[in-house]
Image (cartoon, rainbow, N blue to C red; front, side, top):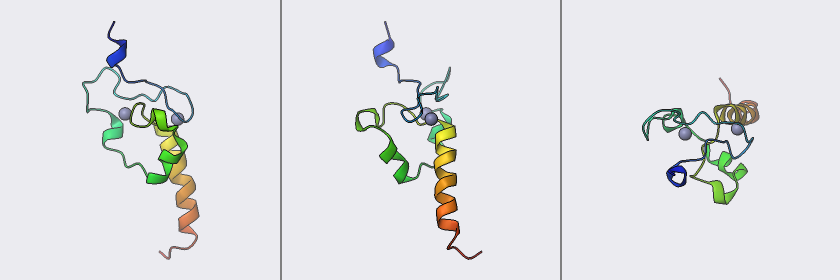
Length: 76
Ligand SMILES: [Zn+2]
Ligand SMILES: [Zn+2]
């Protein structure tokens, strides 16, 4: 009967399990230490924002895609 207080464990972008804070107390999820580019939230349905975590795969994929985009112009 505690389901109402639980955070969804599924990524709002791909629908896979997001591995968010499984078996851990609140605040100890990998995502609390991860950097989420602002643009990634545009992929999340507004009603899911801040409710379910984006999974690592989607984050990495997004970062990679955007890095590839910006790297073309950034001199090393
Ligand atoms: Zn995902
Ligand atoms: Zn999380």
